[in-house]
Image (tube, rainbow, N blue to C red; front, side):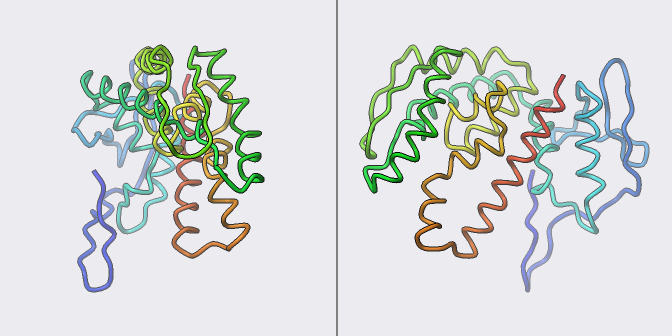
Length: 244
């Protein structure tokens, strides 16, 4: 659940901070985050238990960083952990379907029809990743120039679905967060498999935006959007690094 920050003239709907201390503790081979010695619960009301000490500490850092109000929107690792614990099998199946859908229209398969310098930049960055996905995961995707849709091999889309389904809940949660952030199943899979960092993948996902910024500059809203994306990418790197 996310809470509105509130703007001038509106009530801030974010809950007030209700705890002083944040700690972590091991229990039955899992790790828990404690708020004033009480176990943190997920959005679904379950006790939050994660598989490693580094992941519990990363979540704890987010809760320690909250001010007078709790802004869950900024707590990317906490939200991924909630998803990993709360999601039911049907929701994971939907996430696997969504991953395959992104592969069907994958960002790294659509090269700009102009200018040539942008297209060359995209091809140089994305072609090795398309090749890697085909060799490592059986996700062989075709590339095209322009935005006219192309039909990708069904076997490759199924390979994305099969891989996403095979992961444990915490890797699934990271992948489910990564793919829409990058607009690319290939980039999301590359991060989950350790082929790229999320920070690298995020920059590769915005080659067109970066090119336009070089030519025309960047407005304040676009800059804020980029800053938010980079923060999410940094959280993804911390997430995958903390998984056992």
